[in-house]
Length: 306
Image (tube, rainbow, N blue to C red; front, top):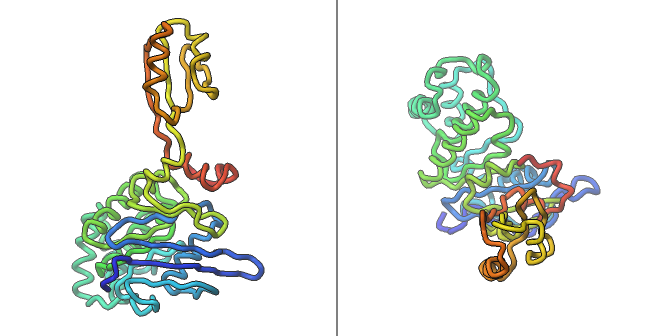
């Protein structure tokens, strides 16, 4: 339990028939961070998480979780929300959460008390004694997530946790994830929705075709793309393009272009000296979605919501 890494893997491989679903994945998840595993559907995210948890065994490679290479022995210290959701529909919310805690060694009385507190904090206190079958899909999903954290795990693993949630419940889930991180837990989650990763992740991996294509921070991912400038001259907008970079595109009375590697200051001086002036200027930072497409290839664009 003393390792600075909550989860690590080297060279993970998993084959299903002739297909390599995971093809040599390396991953290092520091303790106390929110870590995202990003990728399009079918990229190998779920298979990777299941190998890390010990649910399935890798065909090749090594992995450790919370300091051991036998991850299932640490299950009482882990909370897990699988991609396939499932709760007993006849159970009441409070009991369902307490039951999931009991499976991880939490005393029933403590679990019921914590369940009530978690439901209140998540804005679901009114549903504590409602049966699961009465809940909306989004509310049931949040209840299952509360069941995954009720025993206060050191590691929380969430597989596509935002799938199927409306915007209100997505916001509640993001808040809950941050609360768990602030408590000291490590959160490892998979997603194909860039907006959640951009807001939440301290670090992330991008997986495509069963391989890790990028590992680092959100800012480091963005830095794989150049900044864009939107420039409006005072005068003679139609000819200003002669001084701008080759990719400059005219948009009515303005121009949009890639900021040169040496920066934009020298270019602005030349534009002013040439009499064009500056009526407006904005610099656009590339988003994680654009960086993702650059890293994994444009063919992934249709698969990945912004």
